[in-house]
Image 1: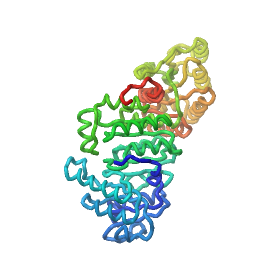
Image 2: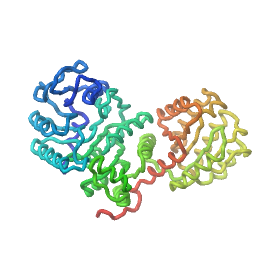
Image 3: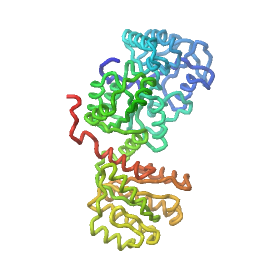
Image 4: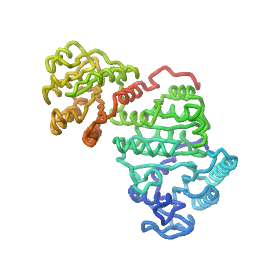
Length: 483
């Protein structure tokens, strides 16, 4: 690991050319999948498959060595045995390669002295040759706008380019975050899986994202660090410029042991990490779901302060238990559920009556009092205009809405909901629980997400994300862990 400027890391995400060493004409092998994925993702630079056996892959010549490539090579993906990495590094130095990303595993994460020594010699070679190493034991960079997919997947799935970036010590977590993100319309700018971090590490990429004009929000999955002070400084600098959400793996004794065998990371006690993240200004997530939820919420709503929540527990379906559970979820996460203003309650009483309905906050619209499309739309406007609340959390059960309104009128209600934030100046989050007709629910979810409204599967998930994003640690009194 070398301390230094991260300004030159744009080539990790926008390389002019990529060589995949360890490619194969057998499309079932990882090296071949990497090449096929770059083609499928739309990478426009030169792609050079490399393997001693030669041959061809997807119409591309497989070069027998790096030196046989006629053009320059900026970025190398290495899918070779650990015993071959030093020889490959020497070839990369001779070819003036800037970045080498090792998909290869079998180093310090094994706990062996041989693995540790091999990493030391790799880093020594990189220092000598002036190139940078990503990994080993990682799946490297991801950049939708450059047509670079994450890892050896032939599908080249990248999603829509956006302004959310992430760094992960786990390739599996990085891949799962991308999968969640594409499904939930999180639009990524860049991502990086760093593995064992023997050279370029999480701090380098946090610093890079801090200054990257294409990154507005940063997510991170960390298992440990070899330089706590440097990581703290990188987190603090990045969080001072844009929101950072960190999920720390290995918080328990069992998790820390797993982290050591996964990426060779040195993990500290959970309270130390929590204090460090708090003081740096980062948001601490406790799961992949929380990490994705926070990134989605910020992407859709931007910076939000949502301490006073107006809950609509059901549209046309009633069920006071939903409202009760929503109130509990908000209070459990430190959010308020204030009583609505007397004027608001009087207006709601006129609109929907009080038989079977709850009008105080949460608001629950009883099926017995349901009076059609206009009733719902007017009621939502009244709730959103209440001065006691600064965010609306609304649960919609799509199958029940369809049974009362039909598909066409449900769409009209949702179009009205989409307009509410602009009309009221208050954000809205939607809860769409799993129902009996999942395809219909997914269609409505996509409608909301496309229009910039965040969607969650449960009240608890929505409240948790609102609380984490609204109570960003840099707004609180810092813990003096590092001075």
